[in-house]
Image (cartoon, rainbow, N blue to C red; front, top):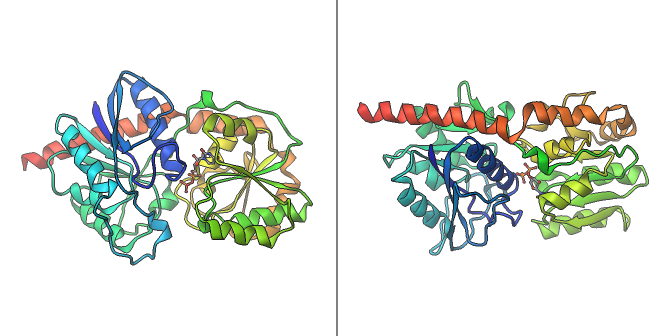
Length: 363
Ligand code: UDP
């Protein structure tokens, strides 16, 4: 297949602003190229791919970044500024897409989804979040009624946010395993990884570290400065150890030294890349059973799941984290979430979309 990938218009690949979408895209590039497919990736200027290949071409687009939907009111209108990246990325993708088999959109936005009904090239969408916008939710519903196969989700619980979706296509996510080294560090510190923003619930993880008289290592981009400041003020100096945003290679090295990762989502987390990345390094995860982590973590085997927002339960499971065999964590990722497994699921899904589109065009 010749596939055109549309990246997120929230930030360039490598900036961290795009959150999990950045790893998803990179993992797809690795997995789909290994299967012999040819890719064109349309992404904001300055984007970097983790792996170069003759089969992948990166196309830069300049313009103003979109505001992420989870940081807007649910009923906000679609807003596209004069020099916005989004329409320029779509234009670019369509012009390349005319010669391709399919466009694969990874941006959670209105315009690319609307295009599905209005051009003759099949467009498939990996929906990266739960329902975060009224207008996008309703648009997906409209497009879904004509093209039910064009949407894929990372987890069942994420898909359940879209009540009209019957039998959702679930693709999980994938990780290039050789980028993550197993470490057997049972006595390491506690870790937390994510965009520092209210939906990620950093305060609950900090509560646990504080109660244990320990520091919490925090990796990730500070997306909401006032939120970060608020959390900092809630605890004594030194509880939060800000480590900043690191590239995967450095992140996994440091993350692997942790004895546990705390994952405390306050929203319906679509998947939870950081959970799987920790497992890949052998780090068990203690998480709220909310969103994707609830489907990924095997309670008692690769970590522990607690009732959402129950900080005391989180604390009690961290105390017994050494009961988990770190090798089981790595094994789970090898058996369920490699970039190869992920690319196979996406490949067979895209084939279905292409076939369906061809038969629709014959009608
Ligand atoms: N991340 C990173 N460096 C950091 C912290 C985070 O590359 O220092 C990446 C992390 O590897 C993960 C992504 O940011 O792939 C966050 O994705 P996740 O699915 O956990 O949450 P999202 O941001 O998509 O809501």
